[in-house]
Length: 207
Image (tube, rainbow, N blue to C red; front, side, top):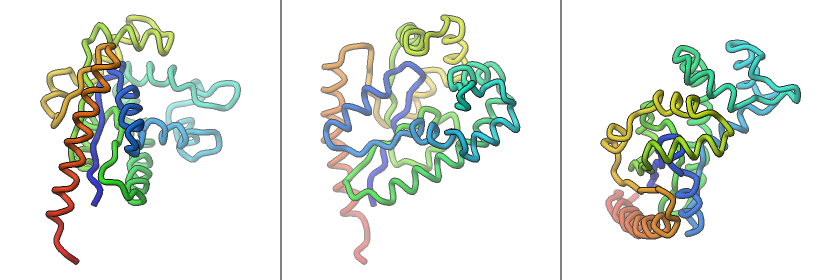
């Protein structure tokens, strides 16, 4: 059975950079956000359900979901965030499990930003947390999403604090802007995960 590494971290921590580093080593990367984006394309049932339960104000003139606007709204409204998660998360997790079942590699990376918050640790065998200071995360979110300092802080405040997230981690990568450092940390973990996958394979009973 393939070793499943759940890659998570707060918004702006740099999960994508870490995931790309693993992909560069030939490791399959399954991205929950990418799956979620496909599930809310025009014509998909999830988008229709979002319209029904949360309204049309988050749908652009092109019929597509305005993800930034919706995210800022639901992080300020916990009740509506739970509604959104109840629509999208089960579909995403089913799709993840289907993708994993088709893989033949020793291990894979599954990027799930809300892995711990959504209590979905059972989807993975180990948790890898990408960590960065709050100041760096806020700056990255503001630049990436062209949003305000207040909106970025609000999203961070709605997520787990760094200490709690790291407390759930089996492994941690620090990503504060030094790409070479990230690459080195990924390379070390790659060897560790290959070894763990080999041990896991040896522990499986003979069929």
